[in-house]
Length: 329
Image (cartoon, rainbow, N blue to C red; front, side, top):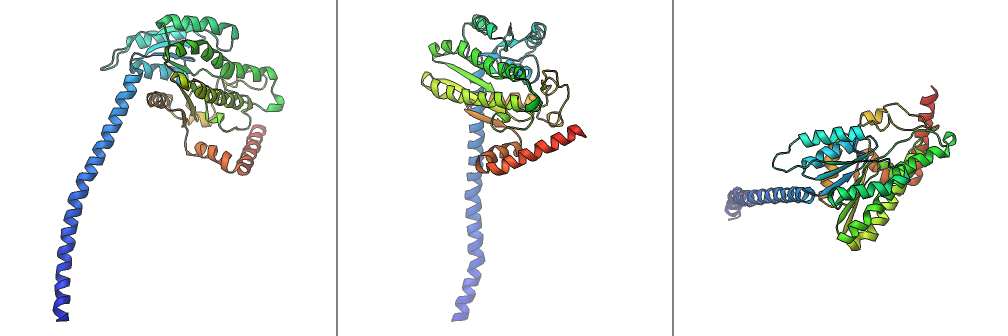
């Protein structure tokens, strides 16, 4: 009897297994397909919302004639934004404006950009520039504070005038322009302020003191601004990219105020400004508050600075020794 029952159980086991496999497979497959479908629908809705958010919006971009600013102009123009391009070089601004006006984007109505020429580092130019910006379309929906200057040098060798120059361009200028345009946004209860900061606004690298200081100040100011204007339904986004393949290091100032004129290896191997500009557009469309656009190691360094500061400081000291040695070799 035991032998028969054991044999019967053995015979039933493969059949039971096949039945369970069939039930499991037929249940999981539609579930997986459904999950994929829902995820695809979610991403599509996100994309449509992003496009709708930017389409016909008045977007002001500072530092628009080169690097990330130029690519942001192209990306936002293709998304249907009404652009106000700002910079110091009137000829370069007009050239970019004509380029964009001649381009067409599929399924999106594009608009001829306006241009406003001024130096962000000149405190006396900000009020007039803000007034001219508002006259272009009557209001501003999005302000992208992108203009900036980099720095390379040892603290002990750097003139305070150089520190002030970097701070004027990277911090005081964007702050002044933001304050000049903010009241109009508050009256409309609508607006989005964007600060293009840097990963160096979260961690500090040796021989980048003036730049890192300006970006730390930028991060702090716009974090405060976000909290204060939330009651007026105004969004604030801080974007912190890592290295971008632009001319930023070439145009950096040195300890004595002269031009650095060197394409750093890290900059040369940086992300494409086109890709970063697309990420900026996506961050705005999703109304993100704070975005880090950096590779794995710089991103980990941000957490290391908080969780293991002693180790972080030793690594930075080691980096400083290596940089100092390479300069003297």
